[in-house]
Length: 292
Image (cartoon, rainbow, N blue to C red; front, side, top):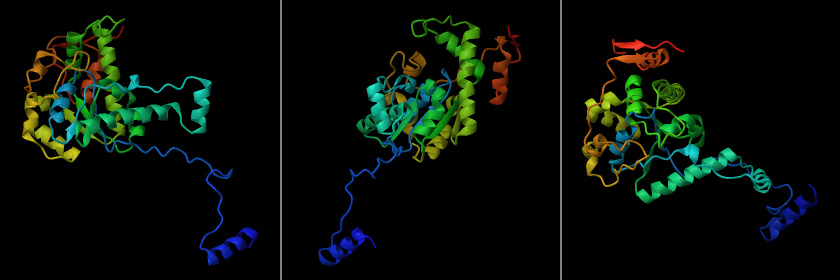
């Protein structure tokens, strides 16, 4: 036993204390980030645009335990750590730029949830599907809803709702819109294959909403509340321009029948393949458009 052991044994017998290095001693090191989050088990709706995500958001937001905020594109919510000074500080704290972003996302959503007075947040923003691996890494306990719609109907709806003011530098052509839609749909399908979750079809939701929402509530661990389907009665079911669908249909406060895919026209081979992947039939009069 060295002198420290001898002294500590004597101190322990006499006064009940012993010598120890203070936390600031050179042998002490700051632990690595734990990844602990403020949010517990957040819910994310992953879908392509124009797939009914706004409708699903306001229905779920009508539940007494579910808060479904307006769209929040996480790819545009970033922490700044650009100067050598702050980058050096972050390295000393073992924090990466990605982890800073994750902490910011978590703080913003946790704050909104706390102010809502509800215990569970449901996040809906189509562009978030492009970040699904980071979302799954940020919140290891996240739950996922995969919302599908007939791919040809998605493209038709995107073209109908296309607004150059919100999409500068784009033409809204069929080829361009189809390419963008497929980018999102591909990510949705990759997420479905990689993550546990619950799949909802927009056509089923609009045709017979009660069993669809009832099953979804079961997945989320909450009781189905029939009033959810009458979403127009809830004050927080507001529809701002640029934050999802704000058409007359969604503003009606009533679940409307799904618009079917076009019965004629052209469809790309890639979009037809996505229809098959999601078990949707391609209308017989839709012609395959050869790739350029």
